Length: 282
Image 1 (cartoon, rainbow, N blue to C red):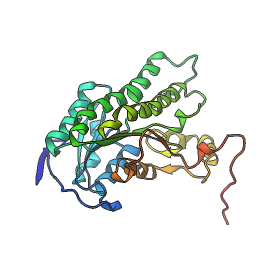
Image 2: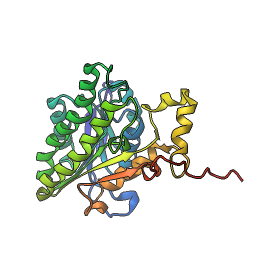
Image 3: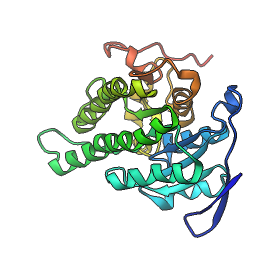
């Protein structure tokens, strides 16, 4: 059975409603319905694409609707505008999943912003915006998912945190605080929702090539310094981090809840006192 939806520009798209299948990697999300926020680029886009490849019907959401144009050529992904700081927008996103595809099995709450500035001078409005998107947006996303996942008999939620939520960075105090908050939020939510069969986890990427970090390419010294602090001596790609999300929201991760999984290339393993050995070029 297929559902006909109207796309961003008024075009229509037929989305197949799939039956449940096997659990091999390439079909482990067969018949499942997922939402991904912050899906216009980077980790969100890569995760939405991965879930669709593995059989899910995906609603890719972002506040920048025009940046979701990449979904137009994807048969199993439909775009939806969503400001995650708006309670009604989160509820509408879940309603779209339920009304169009019969339910909701997985949610990747990836939308986020990064603000930098010294703690003495960063305007409080920028701090408020960081917390609004990175923390309030996640809380609203979790709350919106609960009724639909309860009706489904359970589900899985994964939140994009950061290694910056596990320790501090110069001039990144607002971002550090927001990501530390969602790591503990994942733990607490997992305890509240486990009885409903809903799992909640956080993923902590390290240096990863995304739209948010692209600006560092214009600062080669900073880009190189982060690379040298990873165990494997390279930045991660968005696809590599998406693979972690794909596992965590799959049935294969049924025993994993209330934890923060580092997908950081080993940067968190380093005390920072010494650099890991440089990769050999021979």
